[in-house]
Length: 163
Image (cartoon, rainbow, N blue to C red; front, side):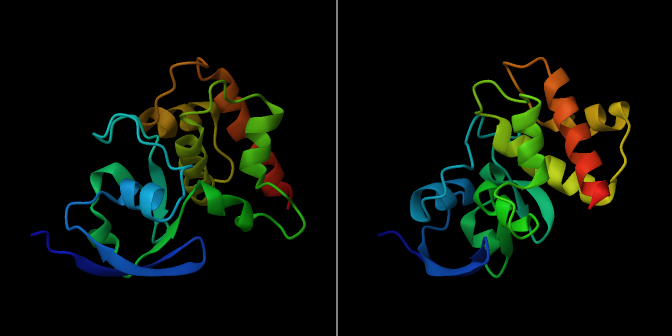
């Protein structure tokens, strides 16, 4: 007999309540229970960064947390990032930057990079290329070679400072 735990959380400004198995990962809860499949699961060991989300305003690897650990939390996933844009903008400047500079190829790692970049630019709105590269070391990409990802972060930082 499996015991279930009651959880409540706010995800992308929407309140969720439900019952989950105690060992269900937060990534699997977001994907399978809430249908938010933009949070990707790659290595399931917290190394690749594809599952990065914001939990109470800070980036975390959702594959390393249980859903019950997020009880009472406020979460933003990649699906909620556009809502953080200025009213009238379809995409957040970070999303637009990745589009404008072709900062992705297959796109599997992109949600993690975007969420990491969001937190980073909140902390450091005028980063150097070296600072960008250092901050993004926890996110892995097998396709791009990172140059366009760095360019995307620079593009977004410029637009966000101009706001």
